[in-house]
Every structure is written in C-alpha cells, then in structure tokens.
Length: 228
Image 1 (cartoon, rainbow, N blue to C red):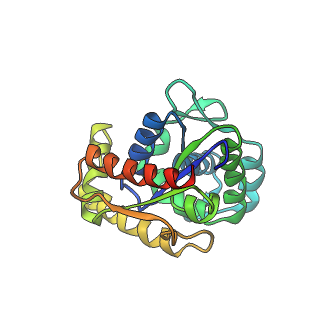
Image 2 (cartoon, rainbow, N blue to C red):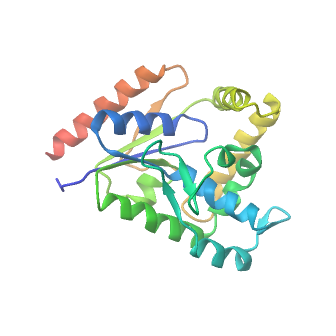
C-alpha cells in the first residue's frame, strides 16, 4: 500500500455524498475534497462572466476565464474559495444547480479540475466525493463507495436544505431539478455518472447518517486491511 490512500465516494445528486465523505475524512484523519463544489464553482464563474448563453456554455468565453481561476478550500472551515473569495453560499443556489451539468460536460473544464483534484492526493490521503471519482479521477482508488437513494427522498432532503438557507423554491421545482440532473449526469458525453465495477453500493434511502457512516467504515476497513 502506498504512503497515501484515496477513498472515492460517488453517487447521485442530493444523496449526502459530501456529508459522508466529510465524516469519513474526520474519522480517518484524511483530507476531504468536495469535487462537486469545484464544478459548482466553475459554473458560478461561468455565470459571473456571462459565459452561459441560452443554457449553453460559450467555450470561447469560458476557456481563458477558468484557465486563470483559482479554486481551493479554506483550511479552517473547508469553504470553497473562488479566486480567493468565499462562495460557499453562492454555489448552492438553484441557478448554479440548473447549469452545473452543462458546464461539467465539457472536456477542457473537467481536465482542469481533475488536474487540481489529483494534485491533492500527491500530498495527503484524501476522501473525495463526486460523480466520476472512482471511474475517472481515481480509477485505482483503494476504496470506492457508490451512494444511491430514491429520487423523491433525495428531493426532500435537498428541499429542506434550501428552505433552511431561506431559498424560496417549491418542492416540485426541486424534484424536477433532481430528476433532470440525474438524466444529464448519466448521459453526459464526458465521464458520465456510473457505478465503478469495483465500487460497493450503499442505498441510504432509509439510513440515518450514523448508520450510513458505520456501513462505509466497515467497507473501508475491510478494503484497506486487505491492502496493508
């Protein structure tokens, strides 16, 4: 086993990937990387620079913008910093959610962000969540977990999160967004969402956060134990 290990947590939107990955990192003393937040930051950057026209990314507009952008995490609270500005609240907006799959389909965007993501694992053990971590970013990760849950339950979770952040939106809008996001993620041209052949699936529709964490740690200890 190498000095550093990589744990990939993939799955559908609003499955609680970030929550689980953050918990795992805390228990293991690893570095947590929210790859989804990075794509949301790229989408926010495109919106700020008016590079999304008629729901399509203007690649000529956006390529030089993202090439010169910095996307990193605050070491203190793990908030995402876009060009040194804390945008943790802005990247969770419905507008960003509506456009993130479009931005993420472009190869040059993914290439830039994947380079950033892989660089983190050269310095420390990492737990990273997203949609293509186990299939594309770290295809040789020591542990791969794939999260899933029923679409309506995921929409309920997302709706509650948005209401807690005072976002005025209906449940039906959130539910439609979740379904559209699933379709886009599974059918995008570059690195579509799919379960890696060697990933272990956890359906957390009716699991508490602690029950989910216990299952994940059991998987991790078994895998890392086999490699030690």
